[in-house]
Length: 134
Image (cartoon, rainbow, N blue to C red; front, side, top):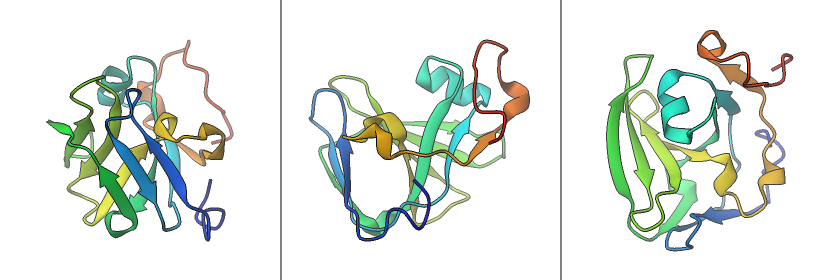
């Protein structure tokens, strides 16, 4: 998934219990794996995988529960979770107004995700094998 591949394509997804659903009508933006310690906690593994989208392009149904935290950048990140099943669906970041960061595994077809970069690699663990070319 990159900025060009999403044009004309509608991406859909949601949480494990299907209480939260989304439809992305615009092109997804930057896609990445983040190995910061905060994303490790949120994902329960060595990194979080996500992509950015314009908030105006996202149709969201269901009510998220929010958790605010400081990001390594100094921004504030609000993480949205399903209150029923606990799936981490998306983030808002004060440094990226009018955008959301959707978690890749919430896509109905996760094969549509194609990360282009690894962020905060220096906080990663030897057992979290990510593409060294990213």
